Length: 193
Length: 176
Image 1 (cartoon, chains in turn orange, purple):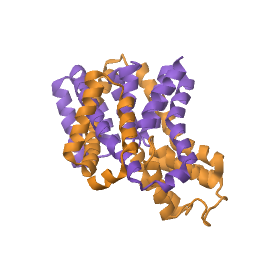
Image 2 (cartoon, one colour):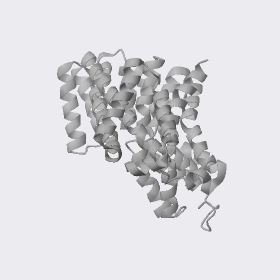
Image 3 (cartoon, rainbow over the protein chains, first blue to last red):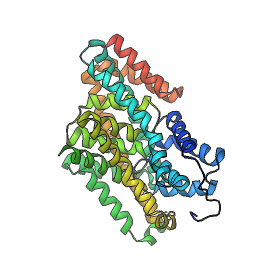
Image 4 (tube, chains in turn cyan, purple):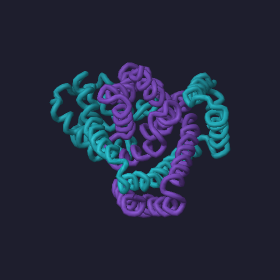
């Protein structure tokens, strides 16, 4: 699909920059919630990619680990603007909020020993707890839709025992699962699904 | 060598974490708080709260700030590089191969099987934020803020930035 006739090379770097800057500044809730914004700009507004191309690229990005909000801009930037476009799009998405984080938290931690600022830090912990609980449910729900409750909870329990009781690094546990998924005979998979 | 440690601390979560940036948070926490002790649970929670209040991808915001906190501008660059570049290079380099296998059951299995583990690590992190809340704000305030923000976020679909702002104001007034 990357050899299709619709390929365009004439997108100016400045519009690439503004598009992904806008996506980065308007998208709340992390990368996955920014995907509709990317689609809106890249497919609907600028027609850099067709709907099917976008869907394919998204499917491929989802087969890879790591943040989705940098894989998509990076790839789209590369498609329409080469290596410069790739760097341009990724930096436009990530840089403004990284700088904002460093500036705001820098000021915050400088005055951490002021009582009411310290209180602000403590007040925010239960909110993060709720947000993380929400994500937990989200991931468990998605796991359960594919694997069922029994398998999902059993896998979670075994992984939990390995990571938190025995002290195995999560990288080994997830790495093991990835290898098992790849080596698994496909016929069994079809029977299971 | 702090840069190398930072690189690994962000490279590993981002090369095994399926499900986008949010999936990477508990894996990063395991490295940053659990393994290296660069931050306490409280500080990590504060970072995450601000990260959720600001727009943009969460994985790179966390990497940028933690890297900067640990080793200055160079640290921020290394941590963000380790977050972004490996999976992006995989995507650019192996696109043809991945395109052919994008509907393969094995490849789908990879991201699906990882989900329960990520969910468990998220649950663990939720629990550790709860304990941290008990330590800092105390039982009453933790339950009060927790319930209020759950209602605001889930029932009224309030914007996370406003919920974080509300908790900051509450904490400044009553927990100082």
